Amino acid sequence: MPKVGVISVGQSAFVRAYPGSIRELAFEAFKDALKGSGIKTEQIDASVICSAPEYDKQRTPAGLVAEYLGLNPQPTFYVESVCSSSSSGLRTAYALIASGLHDVVMVLGFQKMSEISSAESQERMGRGADIQWEAPFGTMMPAYYAMYARGHFQKYGTTEEDLGLIRLKSSTYGVMNDKAVFRKSLTLDKIMEPKYIATPLKMMDCCANADGSSCVILASEQKAKELCEKPVWIRGLGMATAPINMAGRDTFSGLKCAQLAASRAYDMAGLCPKDIDVAEVHDCFTIAEMMAYEDLGFAEPGKGKELIRNKETYKEGRIPVNVDGGLLSKGHPIGATGGSQIRTIVLQLRGAAGPMQVPNAKIGLVHNIGGVGIYGNVSIFSAD
Amino acid sequence: MGFEQFGIVSFTSTTKAEKFVDLLKEGKVCGTICKSCGAKFFPPRSDCNVCLSDEMEWFDVSGVGDLITFTQAMYAPAGFENDIPYILGVAQFDDGVKAFGRLDKSIKEENIKPGMKIKLKVVDLDNGRLSYILTQA
Ligand SMILES: [Zn+2]
Image 1: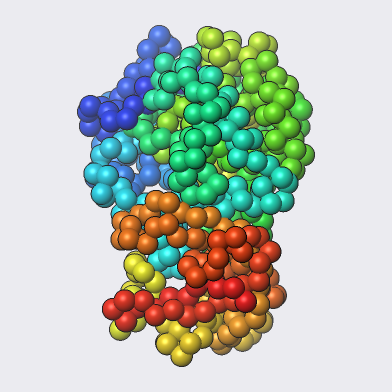
Image 2: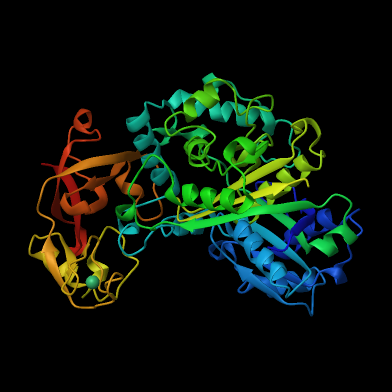
C-alpha cells in the first residue's frame, strides 16, 4: 500500500449555537488547518465534505462549502455515515490518494445542529432508527445506548458508578480544552444525580449537541514530505457495519461493527492493542466509551470497568483515552466529530497537544461510530 | 389503508410487507419465512437476502421468549411525549428471532429484568391504529 500522510488538521470551537451560516462554520476549521501550515488552497486537489444531511437546510452542501473555501474547480462530493461521517471521509480520501487519482485531498466535516429548531430536531430524532419497524415505538439515541448499558451491566456487572467515572475523566480534560462546549469541572456526586434520560443512563452520561467543524488534509507520501515537516501517517483503516435494526443484533454488551473495524485496522497496520499510545473513542454516551475499551482490545470483554476504576485511561495511565474531553465534553457536532478526533490524535503524535499531551505518543487510534453501532470506523496513525 | 396504521406514529405508508398490519388485525404478530431457502425474518422482509427469492410466507411469532435488555425512556421524540415514561426492550425467541418493541405498561416494574419470559401481543391504539407489545408470558 502506498503511504498516505496527514499534513494538517484544524477545527472550530464547538459551541451550542454558532452565530453564522454553515459555510462560515466550515471556513473556521479550514482556516485553522491552513493557517501557518504553508499549504495553499490551490494545492488541494479535491475535497470530501461530510455532515449528516437531516440537520442541513442547504441541499447538497459539498458544492456550497467547496465554493466558499475557494476550492472550485477541483472535484468535491459528500460522504455521510451519520456520527462517523468524517472518518468515512478519511477512508474515502485515503483511497483517492492511494489509488493515485489525487495527491492532496481535504476532508471537511461540519454540523450546525442549531440550524433547525428544537421542535424540528425532536421530529428528526425519532427517525434516527429504522423508520419502518422501530421508530413507530418512539425511539431515540439515548434509549438505544441505554439498552446496551443494561446489556453490559447484566453480562459483566458494570455499574452506573463505573459509567460516572468515565464522565469524571472526561470533565478533567474538558476543562483544559478551549475548543470544548462543556468546560465545567464535575464531581462524581453531581454526575450521579438521578436525572435519568433513559435508564440506566443519566443526564451526565450523555454528550451535548453542538455546532462545529473539522478539517483534515491528506497527501501522498511524496507530497506529504514536500508540504509538511511532521506528517502523521495513516497505518490502518478498518470499517464495518451492523444491522440498523436491534432485532438483527446478536449482542448488547459490545458493538460488533467496532470489534470488526478494530481487527481490520490492527491487521492493516500490523499492530495490536498494546501498541497504541493514545486513543480517541466515540463517547457519545459513557457506555459507548466503556464498550470501546473492550471492542478495541484495551481490556478483555467485561474488564473495561477495571480500566476506568484504576485510572488506566487517564493521561498517566496505561492507555490514555479521550484526554481532550471526548464527545462528552467537547460536544458532538455529528459530521465534524470524526475529524476532531483525528485532529486530537495528530496533535498528540506531533507533540503539540499542550496540557493534554501524552508523553512520547507515537501511535494513536481513532474509534468513530455512526448511529448505534451501524457504522464502525477505526483508524490508526503513527508519527513515523 | 395500509402500513401507515402500524405503530403510535408511522413514517412508512407503502411496503410490500403491509400484510403485517392485516395479520395484526387478526390478532397475530408475524414474521416471514423464505419459501425457497427457509430463512426466517422478524421484522418481516419481502425479499430474501440469503437466496434473493421474493416468495415469502408468514409465520406467527407465538412462542415464549426471553427479555434480553430494556430501558425506561424518560424523554421522547415528537409525537410520543404523552406516553413517557415508557419501556423499550428486545426479546429473543426460538430460532434466533428477536423482536424490539415497547413493554406492556401493566407489567410490574420489579418484574422487569433481563431473562423474564415474554410473548408478543397485538394492541389496538387510538384512531384504528395497531401495534404489538412485549408482555409477560
Ligand atoms: Zn431465501
